Length: 92
Image (cartoon, one colour):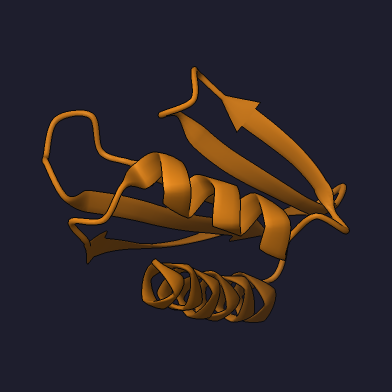
């Protein structure tokens, strides 16, 4: 398995960003981790997922993590995640 990750600085409301990401990926299986400020995991298939979460220790920092059994797919999912995150931030 290959994991790709990035951190994104953003001072927008993490709860609102998560709601927008839920809407963006509503056609996939979603797993919410923690409470309303927790993470959001998008399951693409049994071997690939994308996870968004606000840092609990670093204010204004979001983590985007992609995991797959293919390095190329992990990179593609991370790119998709960054684009979706940017779209959500620009909507607020």
